[in-house]
Length: 314
Ligand code: ATP
Image 1 (cartoon, helix red, strand yellow):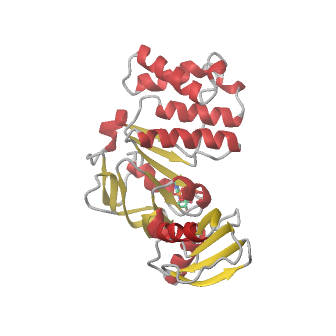
Image 2: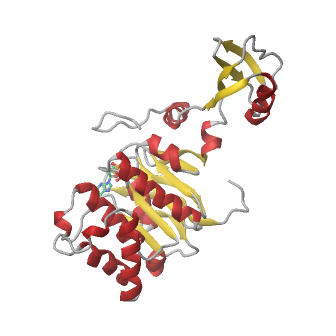
Image 3: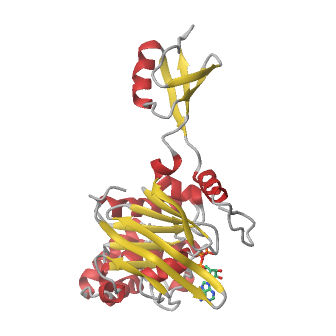
């Protein structure tokens, strides 16, 4: 990550244990401002502990933190939004009232909080639920209401712990759009998840955590590479794939060809060259999955990824 990019939040040499359990150990990471940053790792890796320290809810045993230029996040609560992993709503409150109330807690006037709540609930397709009691909502709806309550005061830094859990694909998309909209407005989002595919789809940069330590961090492109295979679906008889820049072996099946790329290959240059030779119908780079990157990085360090009761390491 370039130094020129401002850092919205960072932790340095963070450690925290609970009795015999070392939840986080000398963990350091920096979250560039205006990005969606993933803190990724299996269940029990130390993600929640890290962000609870970042949000000023837990104290660290050792290490330092910086959140929007402050070392005590409790002083800047109105600039932060935090969706905890354990989610729950005040059951008897009405949906609109609850979201607006969260805004007021963060210092908004009732009028501004109500306006912002209306806008967010509309974005999440929950306008019609404004007067419904929270306990009448489905799990997914409740989750979206809680995300709305996290965002209502338009925080500069938003931390979302497993925001997609329990959401169907349409609602996942809505929440993802809300995250992208925050980024588009220059806000910073930290996404904590054990589901690597979700992180891969949305994060600009990530820290991969295993057993309380960062095993790898960087931008998505730095971590997964720019792709080592190009798949080209094309029309054009007797296609000639010889001498393409940065292309090694070619496996041409007639309508589809797989091109092995050298490390410095530029897919855009290859595409331009290909367009002179054939009609390209599909053009895809295949990158190494984040899960694979994670497992390799952990093994390179002579360890194994943590596996919890869910029986998966991602
Ligand atoms: P998950 O994806 O399951 O939420 P995580 O990566 O967020 O996992 P943490 O919740 O930070 O992981 O937990 C890291 C370790 O610290 C685990 O072994 C957990 O049992 C332990 N731990 C976390 N909080 C506490 C606590 N309050 N008391 C005792 N142990 C704790």
